[in-house]
Image 1 (tube, rainbow, N blue to C red):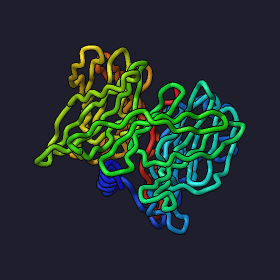
Image 2: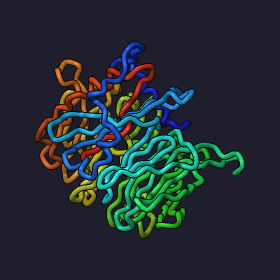
Image 3: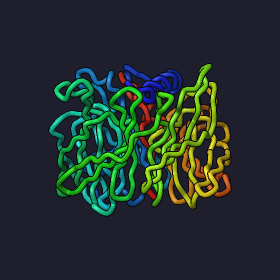
Image 4: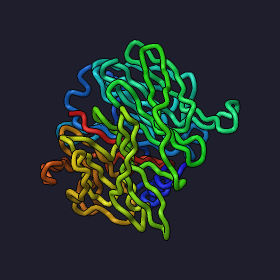
Amino acid sequence: MKKYIFLLVVLIAVGGVLIYFIQENKSVDTSTLIEKEKIGQKNFLENKQAAILFSSTIDQDANNKGLSYAVFVDDTGAATGYKMKSLELGSMAKGKQGVLLVDKDKIRLVGTKYQEFNMEKEQHTGERTGYLENQNVYFSIFNTGVNKSSGENGYDSNVLFGNKNGFKNGNIPHYILTSGIDQNDIIILTNDIEKKYDLKKVTITKELLKVKDIVELKNEKSYDYANLSQIVCDKDFYYVVLSEYVKDNSENTVLLRINKKTLEQEKFILATYKNGAAAVPYNPRNSAYLFQNTFYYLNGLGEVITFNTTTNKSTIKFTIKGARKDGVRRNEGTYFQDGKLYVMRYNDHKETKYFIEEYSLDTGEKLKVINIKGLDKLLSSVKKVTIHAYDFRMLK
């Protein structure tokens, strides 16, 4: 198990002691659930402003007892959940044909028309779910596991890709440290052999999936990298935030930038932390963003760090008020969209414990707060397993 996944699991476990509830004598409150007939309506998403994906972990799915909820927040702030099977580290995608939901053996398109597609093979851990607009293709990549038939370093990351006309199966024969989307392609950073890291391009058409090498990362000091962000791209560069251990329990948070044409690699230190675990983002699969020649990165301390892509200067632009500094996670999630930052937060002292804050990236000003009504009720009525937030996104 790689370093980032280990850190994420540890942080989730610590947070779980404080905010997740196991109740043996209580069933899920049906007032917070979405029936299949309702989610199948073509106008289902019209009054939905946000979605959150919760799931139990792989170790809780013995005897098929795990579960997940796709929670939708409507325009009034009311939350209701659609129950599915589990998928640890699962995620969602929004495209022209609606929202793609994924669990361990089924994929669903929700929006203009409800459709279900069965998987040929069960999956238990997600990597990334996304949408390639030009191809009108959804995809979901899974951390499938070691493939002993592929040799000593064999590894499989199975892929499902398609749309309302059906989904096909593919495979990326690598362990994926992190990934992202560059217009028509998926960009992945692989780590199959200890301390060897390769940037690759995955091209998907309606029929085929192809993996092409881009460049091996320079790693003269044999750093053990952990991913802190997804890969983001502009017309000239690939960007990704990584953690590298230095000494005396110190870790550098570094921004790696790779030129698309020359493949020149540059590394910029954004920060150094004694407690690197506390600085791990709420969701490393959605902690970075490019907007108006500025790279934005939100760490787990609530600090929004900016990097000017023209001057190469970095600074802490603003800090989320009241963000914890000890690494405890309370289902927080982050999402960047249209020059704004959305942070899903938890406060045990508020009547409505879960809420979404909207910030301007330009000024750092908090623009509004959306109280999520009913989410605490849904989560506290789940019995026998604990569920954790793995994805959060705004739908409008």
